[in-house]
Image (tube, rainbow, N blue to C red; front, side):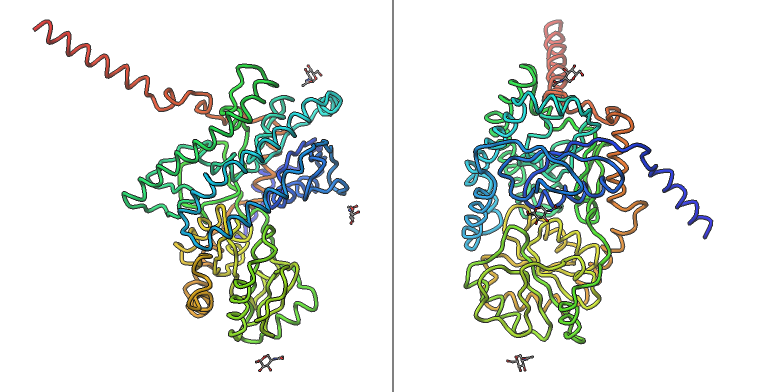
Length: 512
Ligand SMILES: *[C@@H]1O[C@H](CO)[C@@H](O)[C@H](O)[C@H]1NC(C)=O
Ligand SMILES: *[C@@H]1O[C@H](CO)[C@@H](O)[C@H](O)[C@H]1NC(C)=O
Ligand SMILES: *[C@@H]1O[C@H](CO)[C@@H](O)[C@H](O)[C@H]1NC(C)=O
């Protein structure tokens, strides 16, 4: 047994060769929670001795220009695009969703919000132009001889810059423009892969499949309009008239996918897709003293934590009061990350904090339950630590993320439209606390997630260094992404064969 263990460690050492010389990596991140993900990869790469350069717009919201582990190029842009738009989107969606079903909120988010989304991509395209028009900047970037461009393809900027400078490209991806990343590259039968936003699982009835198809085409149409109006003109302007953005946007050497099959439904994938779901998860560290004391004071009842993520500092007052009142009725202690005004119904068992060390709390033995909005980061942390969830999804992919856990028995979802009725919130919290299967299921997912040959972050590092060592990974890229759709689906071949058969039949008839 020991021998096997040693061999395993040896294999790992061979698999993760310490890259002898540090590479130069150019990073084009996205703002908000996407930056939090990228920052983790940047820090990990830095600790392996690589030098990192981050491109940021002058009005960046999250990305600081005085970091100790990366240097920056700041590109002057006029439009203050990010914060204003996101804040508006979020408040519109929350208001809308309080009276709606998941499906209508999908339509609202993809159609009603289309002009706002388009505006964001327009701002991104101005940012790309500002970058590529700056001859001095481009000369400096070109002279630095970067080994790798690392980007989040949710915006089209990274692929354009990498192509312009002819540098190997790695994606840190969950979304590609408005599509779920795996739909962008791998075969994705709509019969068992639900569109994110549909609120369906991988088992769909006939009419759900009909809707799933319709939603898919709505997303494709959104994507096509954004590409046609924003990115294709850029592509032609800077990369030549034969440049096709639909091909360019998926032309990465490696896709580091921020998901895995403990969390997601099984589906087809491609050779250059690497799953690194949970790459940010780490064992818990000790809590700050005041928090440790509060957590200990819960005695045998344990602790509940609640956070609705980076984007949502506060909720409408009535909703916050409802939630606080429900918490006040529980014997557990509650830590609630909330930056809004203090709810009037707040009980003395509830600690309101501006920020909480989420992973350290989730890993604390006294934690019983996580009330979460269903962002991927929080969900992966809950899986890692095996903590059951009461989900309060707000927008985007959050309902669908939580649904993946609900069907695996580790979470219970409440929607914004029902959470403040009939004590629903209190009932859901009590159910998940008192029914042991929720915890058992999450702990099973946790064991599955941790049982991998390499930690997800090491897998990600390995593949980025692999791309640097081999100056790309072209041999892993399928031809599929260069093909027009009718070649990909063999429509031309089917037409040809049909015509041939018909021709022979006609000929046969004629001869007879
Ligand atoms: C960057 O600047 C901010 C504000 O001036 C400061 O709070 C922070 O400590 C600085 N960070 C580093 C790494 O120098
Ligand atoms: C980068 O530099 C090389 C020569 O070192 C040159 O051939 C190439 O055109 C330059 N690329 C850009 C985008 O300026
Ligand atoms: C908290 O409130 C309950 C009910 O109002 C009361 O019985 C209890 O003594 C209070 N605890 C503290 C520590 O103030």
